[in-house]
Image 1 (cartoon, helix red, strand yellow):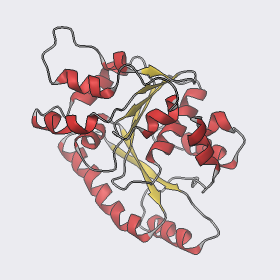
Image 2 (tube, one colour):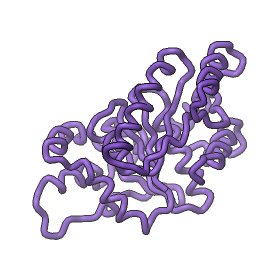
Image 3 (cartoon, helix red, strand yellow):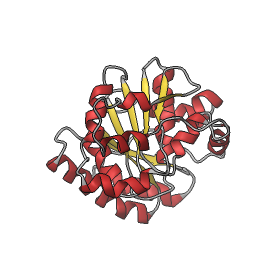
Length: 257
């Protein structure tokens, strides 16, 4: 199963959701890979930490290889790095992805990621793809490569109106490039149940029969500690309320966990 976590808006929790769901999958015994397509590298730092040596190979090396003729090209998994967590690996990001984007787009390498993850299917049962906060080459590549799409949603009217464009973009990719792509659901993040506006906005989505997933993820300062320690919540504090919400969300994913 390959899932892309997709939203064109920054700061909605894409990397946090990607890494925590992936860590839970690995903790449950699934061989799991995180693909970090965002040049900012938040998922890479979250899973590998920012204090150790930088990864020797990254996704930038993988994509750069595709731009030149190689007699014996390396497979995508040759660029993966093991994390400190059992059964969890990451294809690390690198800032150089930003400058490679135009070259990759002009050479029409849009299917390269799907081909790479097809090869990785024998080694990983679960693949989670983190994307940049833009509908660019890397985000389209991820949507083309994925089986399912998760859309993080923070509870305000701006996000609600932007959601329709996100759903339309996913539908366009499905029609043109990836007939198997399913919008698995909307992940409500930073939810504050005692505030009226979040409840009102989320209820409006439900009333429109949009696929809002349960449970909603609570706002918590604990997640900042999780980022700082480079330890997903299931490893930092397995009994925390937010950890249990992540576990329940993973178990409730419609396409099967």
